[in-house]
Amino acid sequence: MKISARNQIAGTITSIIKGATTSHVSIDIGGSVITASITNEAVADLKLKVGEHATAIIKASDVMVGV
Image (cartoon, rainbow, N blue to C red; front, side):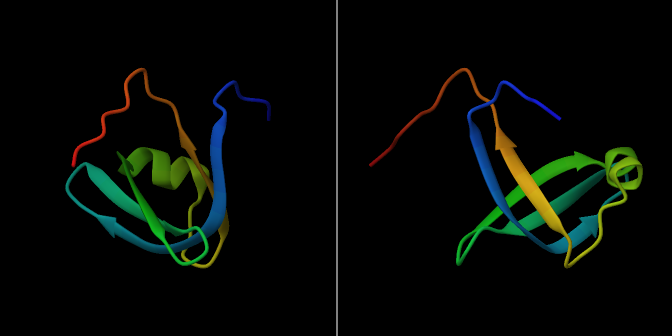
């Protein structure tokens, strides 16, 4: 698959917490964890499982920094 997003971070799925309609998928990216909120349908379609390789793809039109 080719994708235009430049911010791609590979890691391993460490947890999948399912809610009523949305799941929180946590990916260990080498000592830090990124968590994505995606639909339960997407989790099923992608056949996501804890321990499997996954890539966090970050595409945003705005990035804010606070101090």
